[in-house]
Amino acid sequence: MSVIAEESGPVVIAPQLGSVKLSMLLAGVVILLMMLFGLTMRAAQGGLITIDPALFYKIMTAHGAGMVGTAGLTGATILWFFTERYVSLAAGVFWAFLGFFLLGVVLILGAIFIGGYAGAWTFLFPLPALSGGLWQPGAAIVFLLGYTSIGVGFLLLHLEVGRKLIAKYGGIGGALAWPLAFGSGRPEDAPPATVVAAMASTIFNSLGIVVGAAVLVVSIVNLAFPEFTVDALLAKNMIFFFGHVFINASIYMAVIAVYEIVPEYTGKPWKTTRVFAIAWTVVLLFVLAVYPHHLMQDWAMPGWAVATGQIVSYFSAIPLIAVTAFSLLIYLRGAVSMRWDLTSALLVLGVAGWTAGSVPAVLDGMIVVNKVMHNTLWVPGHFHTYLILGEVAMAFGFMTWLVRRGDERLSGLPGTAFWVYVVGGSGFVLMFLISGAMSIPRRWAVHLPEWHLQAQIASAFAVLIVLAAALFVLRYLTRIGRS
Image (tube, rainbow, N blue to C red; front, side):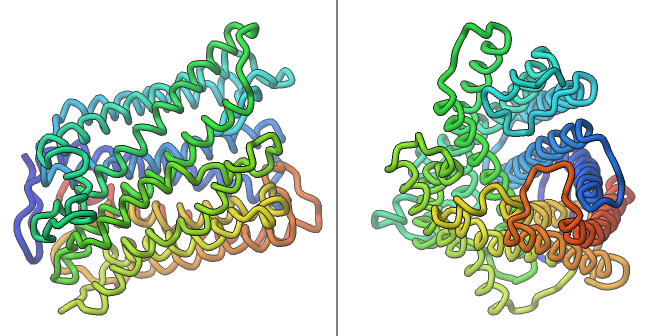
């Protein structure tokens, strides 16, 4: 059993600190590698380097699958670590989760760089089977089996978290603070903010993973036995339901680090209020309902589904702002003494970046905008904002918190690295958004000369991100065994 000594406040008992530290180390290394992949692609699009288009799409597939999977890994690790402050979780489940995740990584990388699979992380049916001779069906099967392995690991983790929270807090409603939200419950009797967030994230991510597993299995069967047919529109709905829920769950799980760590810096607990409880129930519903805004280009979609996707997209940012961004501003404004170090700065950046990323996302969720912008670099702009300045920043903040030492300040090399990350990340995502507004298409390996400047500027900002991220990971690595 490991102990983390707090600068102020109670000593934190962390029975599974070793496995959590290992998980975050692996995640940090993979994030850094995926950033290098991203830099390579933008440099190629800017004409700074030349790579074969077939290799470009392999890198794009690995980058997408790697970043989404690693965001999920960091979010789930944060959820697991802090949920264990309130319920006892089986250590073997986390090791099984990590084992299935690593097995999936091996299968995915083998399918891409040995088997030649380059069908993007979304594996849209029937594209894995239509390679034009670039890869064989076996490579696609191995890729999808990798996803299936990762999904099994996540489902095991969520089942363990869910059953323990339900047992302790008297059911799903109790863990979601429904007596406070919709009844006469008192705030002092409500579960902690972490429990509410963990229960909601467990529900919608479990549902998404089950749907994803179903479409993965039928896709694998179709690849092995082509005579087994699948409705393409139904498969696309299932894939985007799974993908949208999973990446959103990654961020909602990571924000638990804000709920648990920021109070150490403000001197006030993050309380579960009626507004907080209601907002998280709305989040639960919205995350499940908003995915059709990815399908507005599919004219065969029922009109009511597309309209639902747009309407929910309009309001999807409201619970985010209510449950985290606004509350964080109040906490920071009312803090008795706020100490800024690399941890607190990265966590606050993560909330700010997540909130900022909701703006271009909501715009793209409007049909009139979506039909023009969806297949441009605007879309990578909004989800890179969510990740680089949002989820990944929170993950790095958690990593630095795990290995912090005494009374640190946001100065020196850590302070420089933070501001380099902010400038690099902001500039990088801004170039995506500007390029999208100029109708530069996404997913093109080769860009026209008139598009090179935007990609070249983005590459320069990407170098800054990589340098800062490398310093974060190196700092974590040098401290991991001594904290």
